[in-house]
Length: 105
Image 1: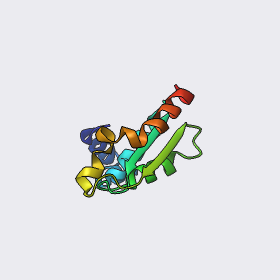
Image 2: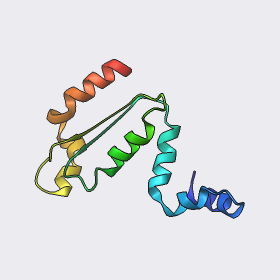
Image 3: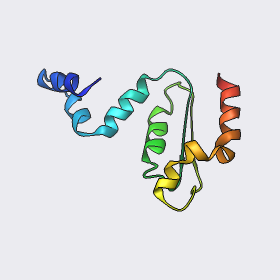
Image 4: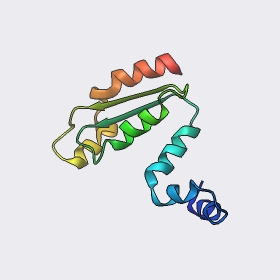
């Protein structure tokens, strides 16, 4: 759902639309709730924020969806380096992702 649709829902009186408009975290939770394939959230501890991994996994717990999450130790020294975990850190996360894919896909 894009911003225009949310604005229209808010205008029509949808009580949750305004919250999703002003809180991007709620929009992420809404999007995650609509996901159907197995989900594996991964981040390095020194990424810009690990809140998305923690909060999205917690929000999906108990929904019947296949959800796994892991915050890996700091990758590199800076937040920028931590954010590069997905590209440059397969030696760290590769085995976990392989097992997840073998099990669920």
